[in-house]
Length: 287
Image (cartoon, rainbow, N blue to C red; front, side, top):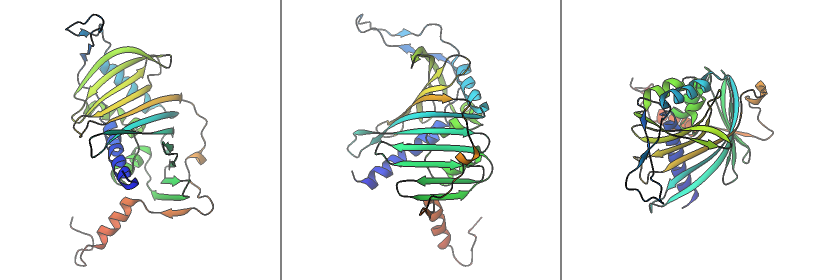
């Protein structure tokens, strides 16, 4: 598998994961069956007892994130890339996300290969910087984080895993998408009591572990692309949540380092090429 093949496959999986993150929502609340104890060799499954209200828990998490004006969090991500042979290969990356609503977003990314990237938004410009190559792409996009993220994904076709979690409209997104939602169990992640929920959308099965208590933060997310060949998964572990980070405007603005070269986003190059093929009679294209 050469580098270009890997990048195309990786970009496909992660782009799907980005869009599918917005599909976490709720419409039903049922009981999940638990596996029978192997030592008992039971032929029936055991239902989880007295499940909490999964819909309420998920909605509370979404509203809490949407209303939090500033936060930072570290993520450890792993995702499957299905090969032509059908074998699934796992890749990973680590990220630190810093949010300062309404206009500040900073994502520091390190791939499992060691390659690093930074995504910045300051309310005016979206910038992606590659320190190892000293290259950056930048485009103007006023309007706040929600508008910038939507433009980043849908117009620039860039990757930003679990982007929906960053949006102020996250509660509305989860309200509209999920077809079913179950409460699995209460469990513990990193010494924190959590609610384990499982939901389904038309294209994705997801699981989310949400901290119990006054700060219902997501601690783990698993997405399974049930309609994709090989049913690849995306997994993210959250750590070091900080709901009062010390932030400055300079953290979200980009100052090119010495010798940095500016390039265009690939989507912008494609748009330019398309525009160049239009006939002189229709310079603006058909509307």
